[in-house]
Image (cartoon, rainbow, N blue to C red):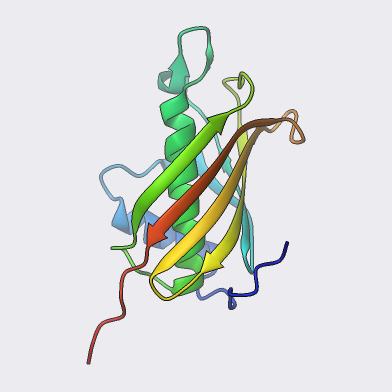
Length: 150
């Protein structure tokens, strides 16, 4: 389903990465978060886990997948609205479907709605080695920072 409320991108992948590095200066994920594709209404991102992202049993931890979904959805929204650092998560629901490997993880992000005040993003996560096998599925809603008044 192609969203009908999304207008074109307002930030390139490089501009978006620079924005994220600036906004999250103290907590930025460095080489763990990559933008593979960015287009109108969609993004394909990769998360490269490190040993501290492991949970007991040697798999990728749930909080790590949750954080990846959150930062990816935030990134996609800002790519469409232009830089709005005070855009905030209002709801994020994740369903864990299968045991994920502690390995590079792909996130497919789809803008379901982009309004003036709220945005909704659907997230699908899969290990890079098996991109068609969903390990987690999420829906995220964000309150969009209002435009500055003149």
